[in-house]
Every structure is written in structure tokens, then in C-alpha cells.
Image 1: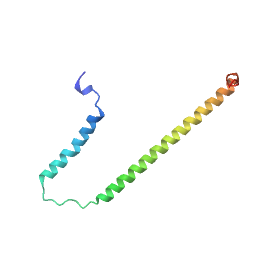
Image 2: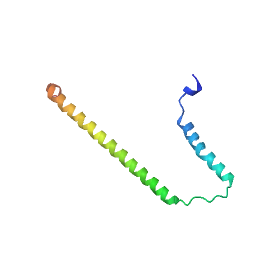
Image 3: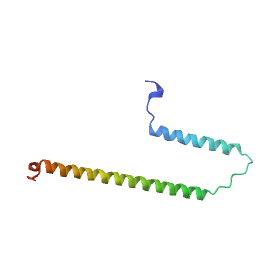
Image 4: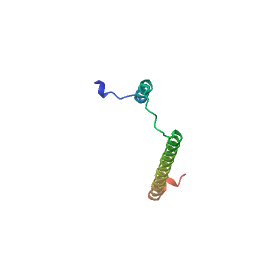
Amino acid sequence: MAQGQKPVCEVCMRIRWFMAIAIPLVVLIGAQSEMPLPNISLHDIAANGILLGLVTIFAWRYYEYQRDKKALARLLEQKTQYDEDFPEDTQGR
């Protein structure tokens, strides 16, 4: 099997992302440019990121809840239909 066809492990992907972020930061720190840093409020960026994450997680959990609720309703409907079609199977219980 060729190298490009092997699946990439999760740890390798995390290392690659870390390196992709860390190397440019080290280069920027090492460059010691005299350019002023942009006036960006890091607190606002962090707060917006946390809020976005919270909304995303809430939306995903709500989606999972609704999906499970619909699946349970379908399952109960199938059970009711089965009980109506084959009453002799369920009377002994």
C-alpha cells in the first residue's frame, strides 16, 4: 500500500495542527518586528468563541434529543402495529 493511502491516526492529526499553529508563531516571535500589534480585544474574541461553542453544543444536543425522540416514537408505533397484527404473541406476557 502506498504511503498516501494509509489512514492518518488522530494523534498525528493533532500534532500536525499543533505544528501548523506553533511554527508560524515561533517565526513571528523570532522576527521581532517593530510593527505595532493590532488593537484587538482578546477578551471579546474569547467570549464570542465560548458563546459560539455553547450555542453549537446546545443546538447539537437538541438535534440529538429530537432525533432520539422521533426514533422512540417510530419504535413504539411499530410495536403497537405488531401487537395489533399478532395479538396471540403478546397475550402470554
